Length: 99
Image (tube, rainbow, N blue to C red):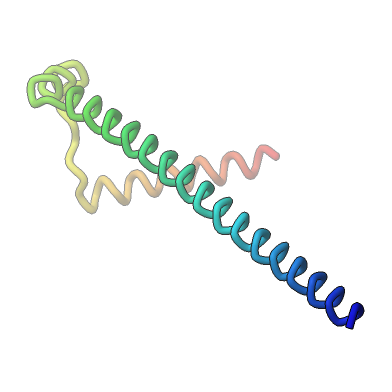
């Protein structure tokens, strides 16, 4: 009888320990999830701040002034694209021959 009672007490103790360990894992997982959520919120705040800065710097008046500084920009067309590809190819070949 004593052996059965001892085995029962030890079994109940082990079950209690396992339940506590599982509960601790759940609490830790919830904590980790909350931390990740806070990091996501912080990244979202940073993203929106950067978007606001980009929007402020790309006002039509700002873009017009930049356009005036750089002068007239050439439009992309097939002839210009072929010329750029040709120049890039020549540059790569020249760099390869210098090695």
